[in-house]
Image (cartoon, rainbow over all chains, first blue to last red):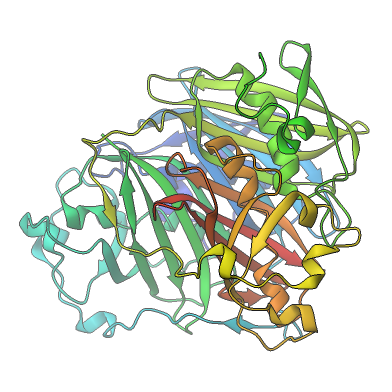
Length: 270
Length: 270
């Protein structure tokens, strides 16, 4: 695939680049620029590399529905993506990718792609509202966000919260619900491909109830529209914790107030 | 797998029975007892047959997270399920199943199983409430529900709505949000295996806005607890319709007020 002049050179694109090795087989190199509290690369970032391989062989431009199962923690370093075209239809194309490190499968993702070109004739119903947030420049930046030791993702992604998150001060009595702005730190604009990764970039909502060790079992994301350039308004929340499991919902809205991605994860407390 | 005396003989179990043909290969026969408005067998029912094959080879008892991609419409008749154990871990087991008819793949599902045995020591947080419904016996049954021509699922599943759904009278101005009771018509009690099918048994919420022709692209379900016997309280809703696509959320709560399953689908309007 020839470089895309609009995104080439940005960190997300460099760090998810793949090289074709054989039919349906690609090499990727995971970097340490997207590590989280777990010290492993963020799952959304890892998924982004896997889908960057998968989409090379699909005829449709936009991911509509992606489901990823996280089988083992990823590590910075070499990875191999094995892709399969499952079905090419008229309106959609479905494929699967298995990402391996050290001969072991770490992520398996299935995805249906389609075309989210704006269609003014399509019916629109929107029964929910975007987060109501102060302008990004009016949100205070906690000093911890400026010096995120070992937390690669906090250097690669910018976050703007309307207030100081309680978990930064060790509070565990919060409500697992947060609204905030997000964008790539180096100015890369969002697109439907990047949204599939970005839905996993939120600090977990359960940080607000003192749960720092949580790993994703499955993540399912629906991309609903191509995002406008600029900051993205995000809403992340958990409503049910039980049996050592919790769901986490993430919504991303663009600056025009359009819902562009919905995501739900099932995660396990360690 | 030897017959389970608690469920053997019920229609859902008869109609999702599988027979082993070879390692990882099973025969199933889809029936016409679960057809919907589309005249095709309900996707949840079809998924139930596929998972009935997959679970034979997994060590854990309960589906925790299942994602299914619906590739082609199913038809009553023979089907072949090809299963793969993806990873057997300490707390979870993940597998994949491809269901084929006439040599073509109709459903691909990936699933992580675990153990939802009640754990009194586990942290519980429940920030949402079950549907507030009159007792099932106080819900009027529309006469259309008693004589559902060609609609197999309405004979196999019982529904109790607190009021008469507007779509029965051709109204298209409703809110795509419904709460109702559901159970198998023949008295089969719910369990975690059946819940994965039951999350797809709701009449679509978008019927309330006049959309009858909708097909599922992807369905993702998280099973959160083993359900108590009896009627299940359900909540189905759509918040966003755009670009010919809509999501549909479904929650199932058991009679004790416990959330037992959460599901989101991405569906395409025809």
